[in-house]
Length: 183
Image (tube, rainbow, N blue to C red):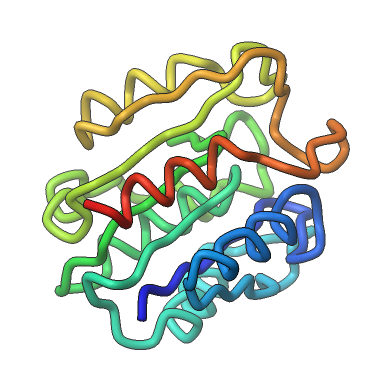
């Protein structure tokens, strides 16, 4: 059975924004979906988040897909660096590769990102960015395209894709996941 793990972002939760909707939609399509509550989301630490994601995934395989929002995206990338078996793919929503100037996020960026290792463990990446995200510059879409050969989707006027922005459904994420799972 194909399974999807949805990883929320900084100060997020499994019940926040579009994650409950996407979980329900993917379950209707026959996926097994979990949305783990990441540890201490107000004060995230990479080691704790990575450990929690590893437990949530269990044994990685080609039927495992990861969907991350914001800080959940770098958590996914750090996870992909740490495994030795490829997964089916990843969808990165509002992902970034630096602390964006926030001290609370620095633990995720203390070491360089191992792009080659990530490519070995995740052949398919789709990124979703907004043209007016107040936190994550659109240039990250091009960066992921260059480093991971990611397919890039740019949405108009979706801000940071968060519940605070009024985003409770994200059809583009469902479409990306379905496209990826079909091969």
